[in-house]
Image (tube, rainbow, N blue to C red; front, side, top):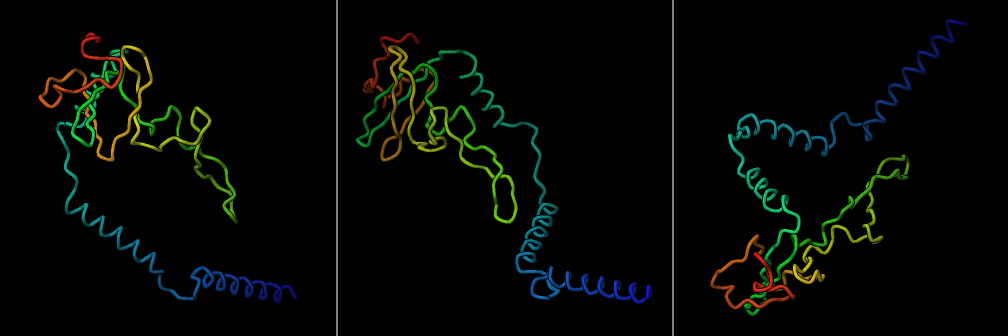
Length: 196
């Protein structure tokens, strides 16, 4: 009797393994899915191209140098003035003189997303959801064409948008370029009232 039980258990185990193996392939086919074949093709192509054409290394990074220049320009002196020149669709120039850099609405003091535990159907897992801004709204990372800043003389809030035939240029000092000679002040600060 014991031998019969052992034989039946072994047969059931073998049948279960065989059934599970065919169930994993889905359609009973032993060939990989189109998605698997394509993924394998992409990976092998990437490996071959990297082997044949490896990325070159640099002795010097102009990008890092320019990033450091930006940090040295804007990150060392609190209250540093910025000069914003705006051109409208008619080609006319105006300017703001701001205390500090202008900021786009895309910038947030807190991360725009947070990780939460979520019900993902059959399983639970982590998901990233939009996080509120400091003002309690969900506006972070949107409206990237609107900028704002603080007028250097009055401290007034100023805001403008770019696009739709309006563009702007930003400088760390006033510019005496010919196109700016008739630029009109758009805020209370003017070249005459602000110490450069």
